[in-house]
Length: 295
Image (cartoon, rainbow, N blue to C red; front, side):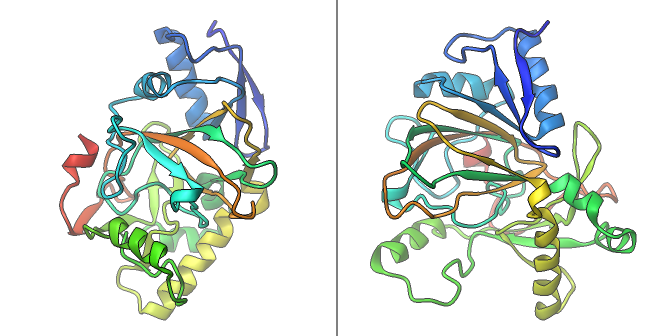
């Protein structure tokens, strides 16, 4: 017995976990069961936990060593492993992405904990990139199995519009150190062996393809990832905690709450270098191995 129950939310992704108080230490059997559930369901949701930062850090640490908050963005004061995601400080991830894929070893998993939520909007959407891969036509799967994509933190997230002063400063901080990394377009999960699309907002071009063809292919693959049947939507309440497998998912927080305050804390678990179908691992193009971030 693991002492908790799983309640599936979507047919392809997501399960709510009940029966656990994450403010209390968990035993090894429970942690093993949660990790197995994470690999199976990709995203786990815990309602009404009302945790402190120390509790979130302890919980995330059950799944592996922690990263620092971010390779370039400052951590919460006094908490080097906690990234504040604050709508009033530019924390509006209004784009599908997988966390920190511009470094060679992106996180294994991410935890998000809600502190302030708007009365409407501000949900988080999480997509299953493995079922997206399985949805591809067979010939397309065979082709993308051998492709690589360049991921970078230095890209036009404003999509051609002019940035205001606050946005320009946030971009300056985010790109203070430039990273470019080549990852396999199809990642083999290190625990389950399942294949999944490993693209998202930081993937800017397909290695070896002309720019127009790169954009078209990335747009096509993203369309499979974000099909409604691959997506679960979580409506936050204060005190919730979400754990998702960063090796098999993308996520998106629509900016649909009219400038109202929304604040979460993120803690991420260090991961390994993605490996493709060929068995080759990701490699750096520009920047360092981000050892200050991954530990």
